[in-house]
Structures are given as C-alpha cells and as structure tokens.
Image (tube, rainbow, N blue to C red):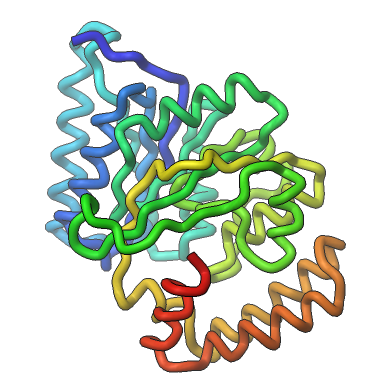
Length: 286
C-alpha cells in the first residue's frame, strides 16, 4: 500500500525507567501514521538496559529492512543517538535536534500514543501557516486503556489567547508539539531547567515574537500514573517554580504581581500530598 510521506522528524528521548511494552506501543503509533514521517530521532539518554535495547533494536532492523522498498512503501528512517550518561530531558533533546534532518520537528514521549492522523493534521497546519512557529493540540489522558481516557487536557487556540494563558500556565502540550527547528534554535533551544524545559522554551519564543497555535481536538493519548503528579511536587519543584516565575518577569511576559500570585498558588500545590495534587490537576485544571 502506498503511503503518504512527509518531511517531518519525530524527536523522542528514552531513559532507563521507561517500560519496554510502553515504548513499543509508542513507536508503533509513529509507524502507523496516516502521513508517515520521513525520520525518527531517538535519543538514548544514558544506559537503558537490555529489554529497552531489544525494542530499539527491533525498530532499527525494521527501518533497515525498509531501505530496499519503494519510497511509497517505506516506514520512517530511524536514527538512534546514544549518550553515555543520563543528562536530563533538555540536554537529550538538544542532542537530538542536531541530528534532525527537517525543519518541522514533532515531539513525542516514549510512553504516549499518537492518534493515527496526528502528524498529518499538524503538518497541514504548519505548511498552510508559515507564521506559526510551534503548534500543539489537546491530549487525552489515560491510565490503563487509551480507549477510555480519564480526562482531556484542553488549551486555548490562537496566539493572543495563548500569550495571556502563558502568564500562568504552560501554553502547549509538549508531547504533542510540532515546531520549526530554526525558531527553536534561534530561541536558544532547550535549556537544563528540570520539569520546565518546554515551558521555558515557549516563553523565550513568545518573547521573540513567535506565534503559537493549538489544534482544538485531541491528537495524542497521554499515559498518566501516580508518578505523573509526584514529579510535579516536592520542595525542589517548588523552588524551581519560584525561579521560573522570576524568569518570566525578567522576560517581560508577566508582571511582578502576577508572578507573586502564581507562586502563592503553586507553591502550596507542590508541597501538598500527592493524592490531593492529583485531584487538583484532574478536576480543576482540566
């Protein structure tokens, strides 16, 4: 069957705590797109263990086997970038960006699942609207079965709304983002800012005048667990929240009064018990 191939690189980062079965499902969802990406760049952020290596090897062999097929029948080319030590998401993604062949880069986490038409929808948007530097979409959050999502993470659509939204919350769902590599590089790329790598990047892009957009429908199933909210808590995260709000002020994206309000609200959310934090995210912020 002839496949539509698009000039898009899918950028993923893998580390040792990922589950092999989740990685396999995530990769299959990339290979199963209605518009097939030309390339997948998978960064191994430090040693990942034998089971994950086996999954990566399977897809490397699949990619090599496709090389002998006609252009319209090939899956994505897979590039595996191996880092000797785990350096965190920001550093891993910057390493991966250097290996991306295309201007349009789609982010994907190694435990999530793309809707079959995700890349086609975003590619059509980005090619029709060259003024958009980065786009995302809503995401369906699920725990065990993507057919039964427990919530949907909705975001505003247009750039003026997103600029206001960014004063208090992340304007793009990072696992469902497609961006122009040149615009990300011009903003300085990802920086090492644990748990704020993407939000900080969008903030710097907005400060440069870049336009953002969100497709108003879910295009990705986001795998949710207790760890999802545990990572968003603790004193370290709370301190980083304060640092982040100060940086937003320095960029001119928010006021001191707004930053103080954000800190007052969010600091408490970071240090409360995880179950209560999960309820707040699930019921009040979705």
